[in-house]
Image (cartoon, rainbow over all chains, first blue to last red; front, top):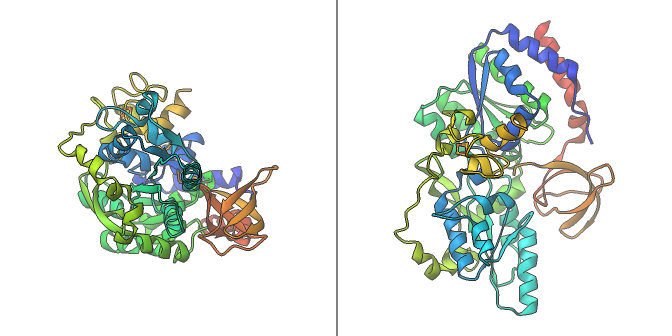
Amino acid sequence: MFHMRDKELSKLITRNLKNMNLNIQVMHVCGTHQDTIVKFGLDSIFNECGVKIIQGPGCPVCVTTPEEIETGIKLAENGVTIATFGDMVRVPGAKKSLQAVKAGGGDIRIVYGINEAVELAEKFDREGNGKEVVFMAVGFETTAPATAAVLLRELPENFSVVSCHRYIPPALVRILGMGEIALDGIIDPGHVSVIIGAKAYEEISRQYGIPQVIAGFEPIDVMMAVWMIAKQVEEGRGEVENEYTRCVAYEGNEKALKMLDEVFEPGDAKWRGFSVIERSKMVLRKKFDDFNAEKKFEDILAEMEGMEFKEPPGCRCGEVLRGLIPPAECPLFGKACNPAHPVGPCMVSVEGACNIEYRYKND
Amino acid sequence: MCLAIPGKVLSIDGNTAKIDYGEGTVRNADISLVDASVGDYVIVHAGFAIQILDAKEAKETLKIFREIIEEDNA
Ligand code: SF4
């Protein structure tokens, strides 16, 4: 659609990076960025330039907790139809995954987006079969506006949502605040930024003095973003810059932001690999209780009380998500754990660091 | 999941627009999150257009990058 490849320019950027004699560590938080980086071998190019690049908690399915997955499992086991994205059905809850529930006769539907889930509920409603449809809504600010827009419409009574939506900036603050990993810069996720705008990151750079660059998803976008970060490091700056100007405005998408605010309010929540992150989850506002599955099916979900949730034995997703280890450092990587038999969510999801690493480096 | 792809708005019917993704791929998307008009380029994620793309900026991106890098080398 638009021509975005330029080999010669890539070489020019690489040469410039090399001349800078860098030794920096940069984090991004987006599966789609990781895909570009690994697919086009940018990780080794950056390595040669003294830039280590790490995927942090940028995989919505990966950071969703087993408790949240179990909510869907409990509902499905009680005859509710669960509609969600493909990656969600293979991640285990307390003991099993939604896929296992499906194999046992549960009604689990993989949908491409929330509209398909609503259509299914409408169909059930017309047929008068009395079935309930629950959409397991995962995703960051990129995905959540669709959920908000739909909840602001007239909906069939048999439709409701489990919100697992999360805000990205609080996770960045947590990573920087924990200080487990030394970072010289952050590549901000382009399509989250489409919604929240460059302004959403400014406070973070002010507080931590860290360079941030919003980047698109072509190889040239990521290369340019790394160069812009390197430039900031060299000049001792720590500010928010926007490389993805063709899609990201300073204010973001104000229409979408307004809808988000109308439907959700920030709540504290655990992320896989992290303890509770304050104000990081999009919780449905009270006026949407009728469409909030966690309220609607309170009685069924009360059975989850006292349940214990453990990470899959041996899985080091938590450390992968905090950027502490690369996938290959997990002893199970490529052995007991592979995309056909994933042990943890970072191998299940196509946005997980383990899955991406395996797909492009082991095939 | 945060994958979003650009397409051109061919026609609009309420909240739904026909989007041309090129190479003969035409699909519907929900445009309630943007104020799009026919002829606009939008980026679509999970069935929803999430922003109108600045086509002029997109066409000049490589040129602008080159200028920035060359200026740095000057
Ligand atoms: S390789 Fe598998 S087991 Fe190891 S961290 Fe990744 S998902 Fe978990």
